[in-house]
Image (tube, rainbow over all chains, first blue to last red; front, side, top):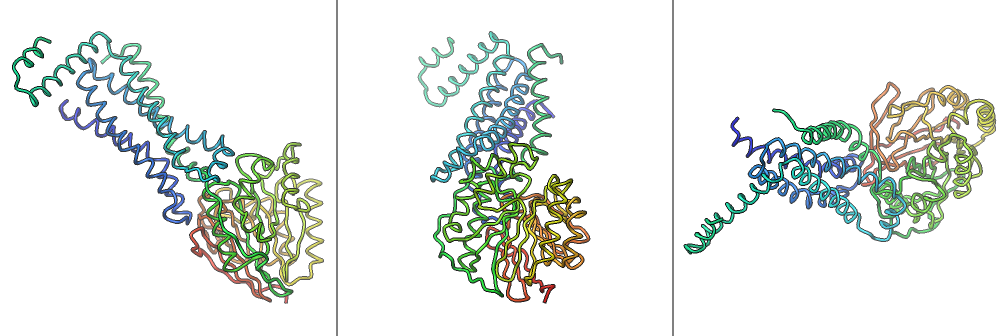
Length: 182
Length: 320
């Protein structure tokens, strides 16, 4: 398989796994509730909250990998950082959820009985885990890449993007000339 | 391709984490999330007609609920359906089959696991009778454990760890089926008491309630210490029905030496169940049991939180 194909397919596969890790706890709980004989609507709120965060985050993860593929000095750095981020997401999300649900039972039970929406607790914890995973992935990538080279590549990437944008939006020769001087 | 020191460290941590995540999450943690009832739930909000049941010398209606002590969504759903069932077919007593409090001591969690989910029934005057379970004070007979058991018994107004009650034509016998209570001096005392009260029982029906099931095809399986020490007494005294929890599923045996054994431990959690040669019906579901006794006929329904009846059975009294 050519590099080009791998570069296109791998981020998609990664995004799907990222999405699955976000969805898994809510789906396990939903399926268990359905099999136990709960009303079919029970658990949908948790699935919906996970979807609402899982879909955008899968897109962000895909976009991050595509962008890192363009600017990375070493391809290995991309995938090491990506796997670290995914592990933090999968473990962090589930363990954070478990810790809050199991260790702060009195607190969240009391809130639930005062009409506090469980969905807010769920989405809040998930957002924390997603932010943590994003942070880890970006930090590890930055930490692994040679900094000077990374800086140069980022700058080049930025200029290329500006050129593409300018090509689409302006025919002004002066602007073209200015951008080329970069 | 060689890795530098940073890459080696980051890749190594990632690989270890990936192995832990792949194995631990898929095999342990996510299934555990599905087995437990940790997501908070809202208590049923309804007002039930008080004292609506009709208990006479020949008739009584009661419910049995096991392992309901999470205070979570599933516990609330089961309790809500129990309250709805009361509205349609009122009952005056609920036999609690143990483990009424998970995730903390009963002194702290009593409102969340008992008063809130069962509030409508409590307000309607329904009585609750408890057979204590292994999670109630952990039943290890440490000082802290004993204190928690005493607190639980006091909170529910339960006379002791084992006792008997009568409702209409049914004598109920509540046992402490934990290993420490059925072995040694404790065990001898309780077993002698059971033998005695069963021998003196004059009502038409005898129903024994305990936490550990002597016959179960579930996660914990049959409690062999109960089967060995208690079952011969039950058979000798022609007990009609034995209700137990502990395993989080529903299972009814075919009559074994005349005794029908029911596991009704789906009060808030579910664990898998198989089938054994003694099994008549078994399913891993959330449920409670609703039982009507009329003369020499007992009819029971196993009801799920969505109102679906998972099992129905009838018994004829063994004593005329």
